[in-house]
Image (cartoon, rainbow, N blue to C red; front, side, top):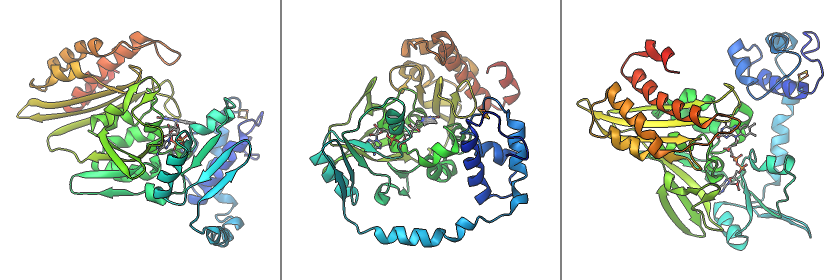
Length: 380
Ligand SMILES: Cc1cc2nc3c(=O)[nH]c(=O)nc-3n(C[C@H](O)[C@H](O)[C@H](O)COP(=O)(O)OP(=O)(O)OC[C@H]3O[C@@H](n4cnc5c(N)ncnc54)[C@H](O)[C@@H]3O)c2cc1C
Ligand code: FES
């Protein structure tokens, strides 16, 4: 970074150095696309990116092994020796931090502390503390619970434990739903994708969380657990109103179930934001349309950013069902969207932009699947 003049004010430099260091450990001679991906989560406001990218391209010239790596196995072994399978409870007169021993123990802890704040990847909760200076009187840390981190596959579904990170979900998700690859890379930057969890993204109930729209379109179901009792619901039913979810005190998200794709179903997922990387959605859209003999027999359309919760477009779905898979049908469904949504204006987009973008996305979906990608330029 010094040799290539990759720093001016230096405010961003520690973050860039650490991101490049992590990249170098995995890929000492990275390509430009690999560098761009590694720097998705870093912003520089004064140097400009060209010198930083030049510095990254030259990293391999400074060796390929960090001496610290030699100690890694030893340090991991020493840390592992501390694990005794017991619950950790650090309580003082001001706060209480608990690390449950297992998923069953988590259920017990939450029965004892129903108002505790669960902390998974902390990519949301961390900001409440660092930016909003909020106190967490009782924090239950669950990031170490392997029982919630599994991805399993049955004959007809994929099961994601609540703690599965975006990064770990990517391969199994994309293997069954290739359309999710591009969408997934638009969620946050890779640092946040490595820590942020599917359960956290759903449980926080944000109207602009990126997993609910495509997952609702795919027919996802949510498993909630309280004590020994479990209940399962369609994901869309979890979101009751702005900031209000169907989750009782002491209950936690245990897993997300995605049914495997039905033959004949066309999928897409789109995210519109002001910036390509590391930005919040203005509109997110997930769609699954099943076509048999040219007729739409089932349609699921789910939007984020259009209402107080992630929500299905039931009027537009009704306008599609039973109709030919044609541009005219898509445009009729687009005209039904104002019956489904009354979006708000905010710093990300105006209400009018949101509605027109949502309508255009239906056309875009049809163009992509009707084999007319050349016409896409005109609608986005
Ligand atoms: C720089 C940055 C960029 C981001 N970009 C995006 C983006 O592009 N798209 C997007 O959707 N989000 C984005 N986020 C938000 C965040 O990363 C995601 O919402 C993430 O999935 C949250 O997961 P987590 O494990 O970090 O949750 P945490 O911060 O640990 O928790 C979030 C909330 O969920 C609750 N919770 C967590 N796990 C459970 C559980 N198993 N059961 C019940 N409640 C639970 C917590 O109590 C808390 O209320 C971004 C965040 C940052 C900091
Ligand atoms: S060097 Fe100033 S923000 Fe990057």
